[in-house]
Length: 160
Length: 112
Length: 85
Image (cartoon, rainbow over all chains, first blue to last red; front, side, top):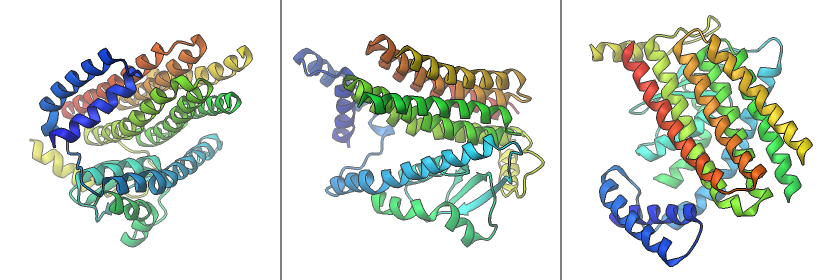
């Protein structure tokens, strides 16, 4: 637990200083040890043997889908904003999710915020409250199909 | 490579402009946040990646800033939208459904 | 590359003016905070472009710290508004 936080901190230090001089590295080691002993209890990064597979899945399956959805979201925003009549059909909807962990819920909420027309307001237990610019459906299944299913499947493989 | 970089920066600047336009034209806080957050996040991704491509020495730090923005920006706008709702900012009159109202009144009751 | 600089600084300037108008007009304090949040992120990107214009890597550190601080600022003011009613 302590060690995983230390690795993340030290890696961030290396990127920030952008050099491998001995003095920089030694100071980085000291700072990382202090930071990781102080803040260990606030982190929850799990290190296990499946981690490389999960990182590969994250980079090669999650990121392309995420970036594509983001570009779609921005074209959607552009069309709405540039249209003189400003087409809107907004509403607040409640969607159930099957994800359990804190990290996976955070990732899901962030993904929903950055995908077309949706903004997460609140997460409570297994329910997400979402502001939707263009409400297309009100039944539970249809809402899940439109908003969460795509990312839920991918995130379940990565985080759980 | 630097041509692609400058192209990305111009696309990013255009999305910043769209974000500002959305922020100005949309009718209520929640729709403004939608437009503002999405457009500026992709604008920042594009701009920073462009800066990294034009000058490869900046690439590592630019990617780090992109990661931080991807993590923090949606969280910030979520918290802001929730605060606006709980504070009692009325959504626009075009709003179709509101399934958050019960939850919000429950929350307000708990606090008192 | 000066013509290009005019192009992207011009576009960003238009966006900033519109967001700033929203900040002045905004009927509620939540509107103002939303506009401020957006201005902060635009500024982060602009500082990165300045790093390229002046060819100085230090500006990227400023952009990083500015981005993190603006996040904290948004969260704190939003929490304050939520509790204040």
